[in-house]
Length: 259
Image (cartoon, rainbow, N blue to C red; front, side, top):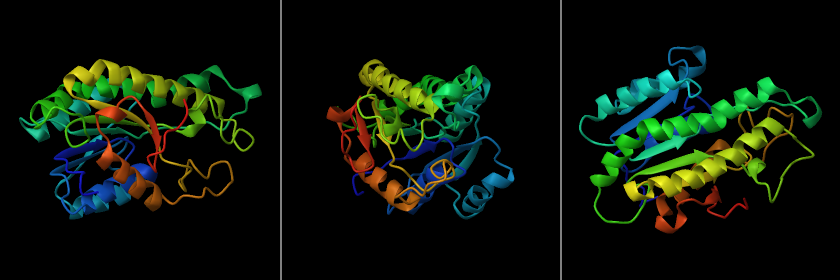
């Protein structure tokens, strides 16, 4: 991970699971970011206790109230982060927050589809829009002409469950609304990569693997990957991303996932 040198990073859904694991690892880097912003819905709530404990030990960790399904909350978070950064930009936006509803194809509902799509797909769209000025500022302030996470990047946490070519785990979990939202997120990532390339922003969809989190175990099966293994792998991938990778769909080991 020697190549991952960033001044600032924002992780959404940072109070538990993969998001919390990412925050921990950023803080433990040999050269940690000057600012690690941890977005979560209820910073003072019980579910954010571990995050609060971390913040008490790391002055460079800033907990930001953020509900990714609420446009006003997103705008307020962008203003809060911009104020903390002063005149500098945001190097890395990791859209990690996501939800899943354990419904079958036969009983999927409008409410489920709307809620899951709003959080998993529309949220990352609005976050990209709101934080683009800060990402552009980071890109402009970084040396070199190529794209990288050290310069400016949006990482959308996707899933191989959103792969149309390889519908992994259908027998275990149909989760139709989740799968559809992640397939749409993959297209959003491609669109962002095309639209934001001129601003120097790299955009990648990343599959973290099937991880031992609340979401990962919700169907009653034990996933093979620990949060630790997933996050370590993803940070290694982030450190190696370059211009050739923008607009791609990769997993925690850097392998291409079929669309």
